[in-house]
Image 1 (spheres, rainbow, N blue to C red):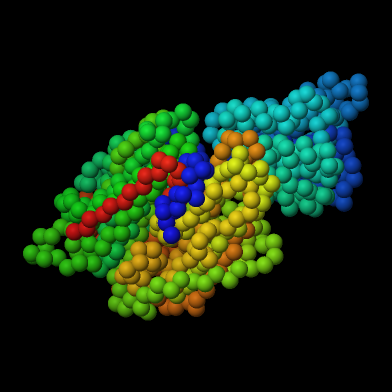
Image 2: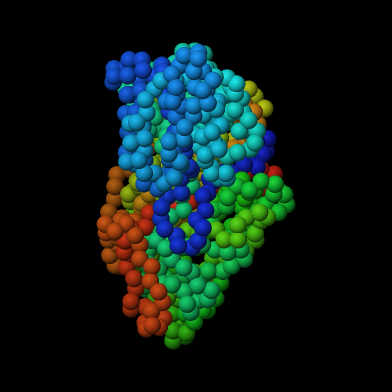
Length: 630
């Protein structure tokens, strides 16, 4: 059920991709998260002095902000804007009060103590210039890239013009990659309508908080969702321009950069009988004004053996509409070390030894930066003495749950994917342009099945058409299955033609199955579910979409295969030690022939989820993969 065979259902939706990326300036590849800079706007008008069970409404708002600040990711960029602190709210003070907007903290990397101190110092007195505050907060955010605003107010704007909904529409018409989320704190119908309009005009969400207790629950969740964005991360590594200089990497997750039409070499020591896994991921930023005919990129991978011998294993992936913010991945599964050498060991692509994997950014679209982040997943799986139970192709059966579901906030990338704790129903809300990720741990003998329900969001028909997609990925970030459909604001489900997207029970022997999907279900570990809501600038199409995900995890855990060597750290380094970082080594002076006896065991954690192969949909879709093996 490949996404590429289902174009008919989504042609009207156009070509949409997502996962916007914030780019590092250089190849240092520190693993700080790349979050969307977010500005909190806190109402400090006189009405916030009204009583609340927590004291006053201002007291409750401050407590909610503190809760968010204390739990926000360390690399998040969060600022604080307020209004109403400099004047009273009498008619004589209105002119000054309607200009009373203050940026207390710029949206820099979060300084928890400074933010909390700024919040604690807010004293509510004045008017409610929401429109002016929205405009000023937008100006304080970076001039490009994904940005978010979260506004908390207990009433409607008392200073129009500018009308805050008009300001929100103005920001959207400027095609700014900015989303506004609003929270109505014990508001009346008039204020609720105004706050809802602001959010929906930019593709954000509106939430009601009836009191301080509700606000404490809602604000951190909404603010965290506003931050979610693609994260490029991993242990720093610098690929070489030739095999002789290639850095040697053990199992784990790495981060490099790659230039246009550049080839990067990486070495992996593979013991006899082992299988090596190698995935490269490049994410492209959103760029405007790119012609469809010049809007695709290609990523290629090859494998070389001893002395740089070409092992004739070639993979290529191509993504169209890269300017929409595409994440492109290419994967190698190399089994050369499982084969016996012939001719007195002259075959340089068989048996144990040092193998070289290359990545090439081959085809380059218009408008992209000269260098981009390059993420790597490397795994080394020892040979087996007993493969365990026979392979199975019977897929897991979905058992749908009932009720509203457990609230979750999907993350912006594989590295931040939210864990779904087994079978059940989960509820989230997607904004246009978002691609969110969840992860499910599958042990040997276990499988999963899931279905996504998209709720009615009050859409008005074909003028709000978008596309929706979901994709299931293996621990190698390799696509297993996906589906997509057009969305017009009415309730629907994915997959559209089958009961569920599902795996068979995970077994080592599945790699020998005739079914290409089942062959990817042969390694235990984290399996990833991605859900996408296509972006659009069409007025009315920015309304967020409530989503429910029904998940079944079934099967009794099995011992799995008996490996010939230890896998304490996990095949991809995901379970190793407390350091949280896989190890990258320089090419050693002992020479490559010695590497067969110096295999680097999986050491240190590499988070097995990384950037995702986005669902690329539309007229110009062109994805091709080919492989020949020696």
